[in-house]
Image (cartoon, rainbow, N blue to C red; front, side):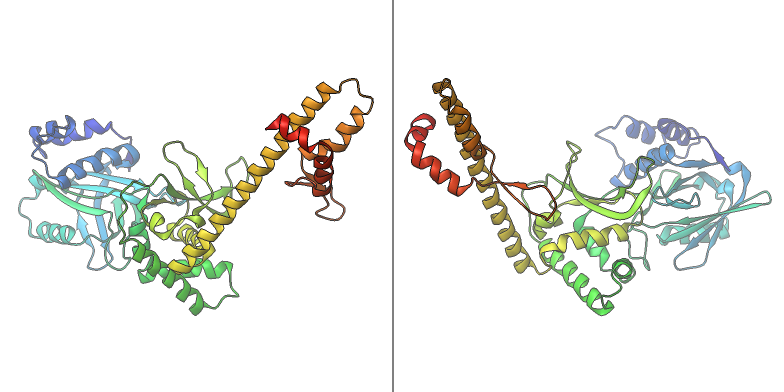
Length: 413
């Protein structure tokens, strides 16, 4: 039932050739005319068509007898293939099933309706319900079902926020164009819908069965509420990072560990960074989130878990983050101080060697004081090699300063 895709521009030209859209409409869209009479919704419908014709599968309508469309609420409707100008299905890449789709486009041909009462009723239902859940395609002795996976941002009992309808010239466009990323503001709000929230809880409880369900629900709902409060704060600058939650790859054969890895992603450089747990709620809520593989709400569960590292209540969490950042800054300053001190010691020993090249005691001097250029060694784990501590041996340093301190400061400044 599937035929090869056409070039995106040819799809628009084809509709114009069938008089479903006017030549002016096609020209304005293809030329990206800034003075176009097309509304934002009409331009979006044509853009969705070009994307879906490129990424999806065009159904050969001549091989169909009828199409049955099912909804979250309401009776199914039956459309005859001759009433459609085009049907495109896009498989959901996050699943392993060819019969799960998250994108589709039905273009209804209004020039052929001939005022049929049944068609009018079906069209009315199609244009008022944005909650298609399944498409059933009937061919000669063949029936194929395609379940429609809604946007994870949807309220699962209401409507698919990815599904849209636009009337343009002599056609009605009903389409769902999947997105690859969402604003955190939208994702956190959608996570509170009961069915979505239940998925978060089930995912976390499956990994932590010892935790009581009521407590898990309370913690996650509190965290989501706190994050939504931060979403009301306005940021003047666009965030540098996006939130990326992917599955860790086990081997080069692309098999996955059952493990989620939330990171900060720089879309300009393509680099990934740790440190999501150090971002404020305000900063996080200004970002977008992308979960390219697997069920969205499973991945989002572990993003929330990573975010909660320093707590879930806004003020205590921020204080803990500030304390951690100060501790990290102190460590960096200590490392810098250590690097400066050891580099100065290297310069002095190099100078001393050149000045005392013929001194028979020079090798003993170097052997004794060279450890001051590398830090001191200490045992960390029994049976394991000693580790280098970023601190000069205080006893050896005091002895050195007592004997060579004046020269050291004169030479190294």
